[in-house]
Image (cartoon, rainbow over all chains, first blue to last red; front, side, top):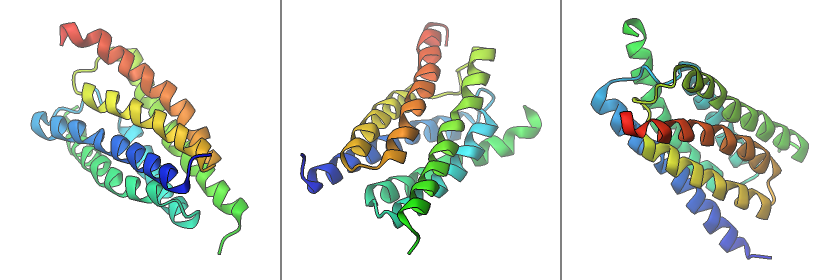
Length: 90
Length: 90
């Protein structure tokens, strides 16, 4: 079995990767301000779910889950904010 | 402290919510076939990261992490597939 340290490290890499993945979408969305192809329901549900993951990670405790999901919530929240602001003209 | 069962249940709800969140995006993307506002880098990085979360969840073990991420990978993979197919005309 891999050590707890290597498992935590793997979780950290997974967390950094899924969290960083939202950065190019945030950059693209903030730059173009275009959100027509982005689903409102996806980002509403996603933000709620990520919030629950944070609570879950605190209770387990599984710190990579917490550490990955806090910045994810901020980044996903930015995308959702632009989408909501654009709703009227879409 | 909440019981292990309630924590697992919370993780399950979080997992169902973040995973289901991709369904409206998949439906929208498959229906419209429009992916211009969607970031290629986001979905490539995201799919790789979700794959690592699955490995992490197996090793901890944290089954809600595994159970949530397998369908997420399938749904995110569908969005990525349409985006890649559309690359030439974008």
